[in-house]
Length: 478
Picture 1 (cartoon, rainbow, N blue to C red):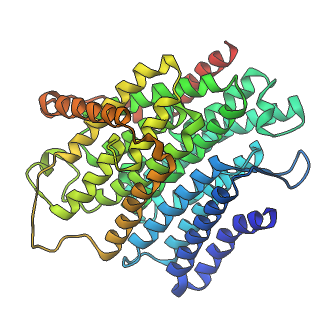
Picture 2 (tube, rainbow, N blue to C red):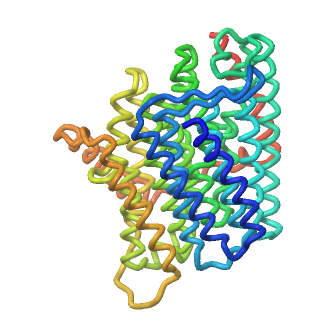
Picture 3 (cartoon, helix red, strand yellow):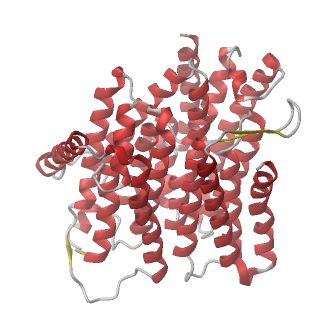
């Protein structure tokens, strides 16, 4: 399994450059990479064993592959597969597919790293790949958004690197386990880098503009898997360091509430989805033991929603109220929205039930509020007008195959936690959804409220890092 793992890690980077040399095979090679990763993830689930790989000494690479890694890797594989098929009939060049494959490989690497230096390299390659995809249209707007993302990401990773060095100074090892017994400033610096990279709490205010201004395929990749490369190490550390677990859970709860609050009042579809991503990342961190399953469900849902947003007649909810969607488009939109709201028969139901069962007592009320808020957010999509139409829409053949993969995955993933289907478990989300829908129809549908966007300005994003460093350092000291 060790040799297979190393070959699997190297394959995307090798074929990424082959794609550029053989552009006529770009789609097929990219498709093959996604399928290989899907099979590797299935092998992890079938063996159900923990694999630790120490490639060198303490200066080298430490890899850990387990069920948690499997959930994140299968998410990456399915989302990448859907994006490639969605783009199949487009005019994307070999450069696009090369970057998708390299981004896919670097994200996979982040999901199995167990030392801070290897993770640093993976996260930096992710930043470069994401930047090149964001700026793919080569417009002034896309270049600015890409540079903004790259600068914020690299600044955060400088803090992270200093923290990693302090961990090594304390233990002569870069292993995640080195956080135990390291100076508080080391933990604070590493957490700051990961919180920014993952779009967590106020550190995530770079995310709405970046995700909403990117092309739909890129938004699907960013929201579906890229931001999880920052969340995964936090979840991993919380699982084997009990002193880290409360900090991760606190950020999970606050992030879930902050993101959903912004998403409820947002009037732009893609910005709503981006703020919802911030909130859903909080759900993953709120219960680290089951974060992998929630990450899978969220990755499929949010990728589907961002791809759908690319063919909507408008990004403005008020304009969409006057432009009924085609029934077929609305059905796909509704299925994804039902899943993330926790409706039975879709894996979002099982993920929310499993998460709720692994919350601590002090988390329950806040996370229930966040869950109701999520149903309010996606009621905005579910209650959009729709009608039967004979007109040909923008949806391509590739779009519908991508929907089959992503939405079909939400149905198949029910098997992960089929025990959720009891009468009491089914009634609770139905009541929650009903409350959320009533709140939307009676209050929030007509509510005109805007939160200031000043916190999203570039200079404020850098300033917030200093604030977050102080907060995390204080939490670690306690």
